[in-house]
Length: 152
Image (cartoon, rainbow, N blue to C red; front, side, top):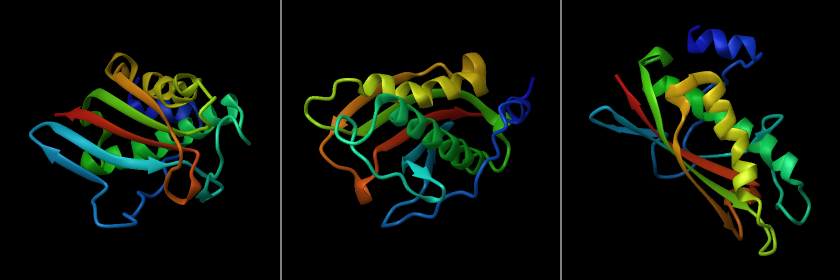
């Protein structure tokens, strides 16, 4: 089953690729490695604002991380010249979770993205990962995730 069939099976329609909000690009490539800039969580087209441990639950954070993963896949498709079939491996995911100092489930929040990458890319989606709790993110977003992938 192709990556596109898996997206369709999960009723996921890739959004338009986000436009950089500052002095950076959405992706950069060196050799077969593509680095995707951090993407912040959005809900209904707006920044998904919140802080885990204060006004968001772990499950809400997990849903936000999944939403970020969908945006990252759209950017990855752009980096691949419009063909996700060129993805050979999701190498590394780094997740920043806007959370209180008492919140300790950043890893569970990040599972929302990691599980989606595996559901779409199968064994090619299994990746190394870091999940950090941070005091704040741009525009008050609850989650920001960046990704490194290998493409053919």
